[in-house]
Each structure stands twice: as structure tokens, then as C-alpha cells.
Length: 244
Image 1 (cartoon, helix red, strand yellow):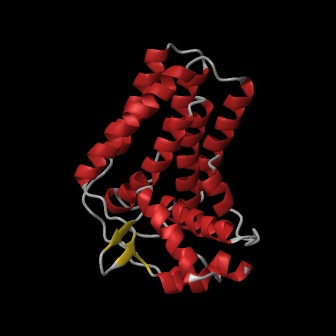
Image 2 (cartoon, rainbow, N blue to C red):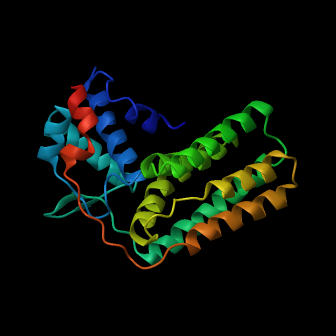
């Protein structure tokens, strides 16, 4: 998995140096956007983040600038950092890009996954299904993105991984804004079907077609905007606050 989310999943990691501290803020915000703990439009106040992570505002500012460079958040003059509120037009662009990257990933992986890789992906899919069944929305969303990212990693092309890491946060924000309440980010049975097609020796074109169908299904599930309440940053990152 991406190191940015691996670090974010470990709130007890020591703040050994300023770069590590800034990385932890980056990773925590990235993960919170992905799993819908930070709603679109949420303001990311430097002072509140500095208090939450027990670090200086200078280090928080470094993390926020890197997040903005990677398209995870936006920095607005006189308003500071904010979680983006992508439009439906933005969504069209994101899914166009995901189809280019992920259909090629599926084509390359078709019939070439090892037994161990198939088992790893199946474990993620089944964990997602359990989280969905138990109505653990945040975990289901995280695992859904993890499944797609693992496929990209298994393709062996680090540029595909980097592009998908940049596209997943906006996808998640689109789901938060436009997906009907109660629906998962991806449907676990769709991931089962996709894994079956890629893992059982299907022709590359067939695997790419299945991936395209899956991404089209996600995009079509977007509907009218849904209002999302803003959550206090101290509550979003309470695991980090209690660990320091």
C-alpha cells in the first residue's frame, strides 16, 4: 500500500523529526479525505491542526502546501486551506483519467496475477464486504480505494500508482457530495467480478472492458448534491490527539 496511508494508519508513530511530523499531518488528512471523515468544504485551520498534532504551525503549513500541490486540498487567498468541493464536471474529468489508467492496469494484469496476489486482493474484497454488511462506512470506503490501489501497484508501474493516489481523494469527495446516502463507494460484488475476470486468465481486452464497466457504474451512481455536516478537526483526528 501507499506509504502515505501506511503512516496515517499508525497514530502512535513517534514524531522523530520535523519532516516526519509534517508527513503525519499529510497522511492523516489524506486518509480522512479518502474515508469521508473530512467533508467537502471543511476548513483546515492551521492553529487547530497544530494543537491536534502537537506540532508547530510551520510544520502544519508545510503539510498543507504539499497536500495542495497533490490536489488533495485547496489553498484559497484570505481563506486558508479547505477540503475541495468538486463539481460534476470535475467528476467527468476524474473518471476519464481513471478509465485511462485503470483499464490499462487491468489489461496488463489479466492472467498474470500470482496465486498470492489473487489471495491478497480477495482478502481485501471480502473485508470490504464485511465492512459494508456491518455498516462500517469509513472502513468500506477505505478498503474500496485500497483494492483499486493494490491493482495499480501490482501492475509494476509507479506512475500509475502516483496518478491513482492523486485521483482517489477527488473520487471520494465526489462520492461524499453526489452519491445517495447509504450506498457504498464501490459495490463489493463488482470487485469480486472484476477480480474473477482479471485473475482467471481473461484476455487483456476483456479485463479492460470489465474495469471500464465498473468505473462507469460508479460514475453513474452520482446524483444530486447531498449536504454534509462539517466535523470539528479535533474529533476527526482524535486518535492522533490521544496518542500524543
